[in-house]
Length: 404
RNA sequence: GGAGAGGUACCCAAGUGGCCAACGGGAACAGACUGUAAAUCUGUCGGCUAAUGCCUUCGGAGGUUCGAAUCCUCCCCUCUCCA
Image 1 (cartoon, rainbow, N blue to C red):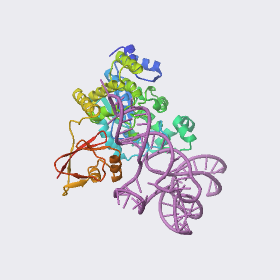
Image 2: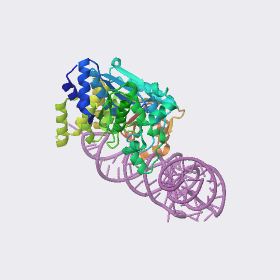
Image 3: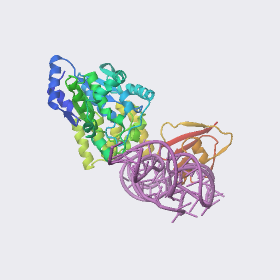
Image 4: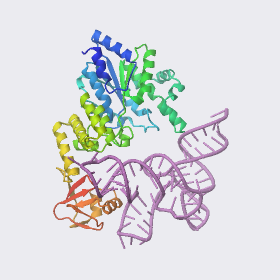
């Protein structure tokens, strides 16, 4: 195991706060002395089936701890997921069914280990302890906290001030997350900055239970591909680590230029000195930022797929968007029809390229449709179905049609 | 339980009897431009229709009216104050 100083240096990279830092130093020292790894906790609520880049900021931090020889504990919030974390939220989260959550939890577990080492990771569902609690237990937990403390939180205050509803069950979320730490005796918990309140609550609970309180380590919240809101599935501005190389690469290319640097910093393993160089070049605009974006896309595809696929993704992108050529592979659609011709609009809806006829008409009027490289302007066109037809809809949808 | 305010399209948000398929903004989509699926600009943005047009929509259900998102009745939901 590395020395305390060296460990601390690594741990601090890319973190916002460590509270309290002296305690972490002390914990690291005693861990080293007793050769006993620290218990590092992070929780995830499986509210969507995918792990996205936003999650990986924390998971990568865990990986660091893992590499340093500490014990990583993942808490899958099957119970907290049903409540929905109000942190940073301006409205109540929709409540998910238990089945849905368990199902998401399965895909989560698979995706975690694209980053973490499975054998060295301990996974717990918080239903393990919550499902066994009686109403009495829950009341006991609730009695340790006051309304004033809960309402201190910015998100609740905002909602209250704006006269938005706050459901009672949401007030329990911090208590549940805090209790998780008690249940697994965490030494340190990693969470995004907006989690600070929940993380701190755990310290209080642990102390009251006679445990040494956990150190909290906060990491930045990753902005989504829109550059405005935090990355999340529900706002659709996310990049899932299980997505195809082409999608990951393309989505990276769609992020605003200002996001290039933060993404490098939080999502890649690029060494410090190179980071500085990138930052400088982006600021001075010496180089077209697109180039840095492409490299970023490649880094990420390499991380979650492979180097080879990363190269392919870039080649494809260049082909389609820079050179405006065709992609390598185009899906073939078998159109069932006994007519030799078909109305364009119908063709677009039948193939699922457009959701409605109106949308298809619009698209054609706007010049977004090409058939066999010819721009189609006539929305009444009857398309001859002889042989194979190549459709291009908008910039990025391609389809080959063949009549069955 | 009492008094008041509110529920409008994916989101925010105007609209208080016909000029409303519903202002504006965001998102999304298309086009132009750019060595970016960035930025910027332009356009589109309920459905069906070649089109004049037709059909469905403003929390839900009824009603008044030639005509309702707008008025009335009941119901559901949210917020505020009182208890």
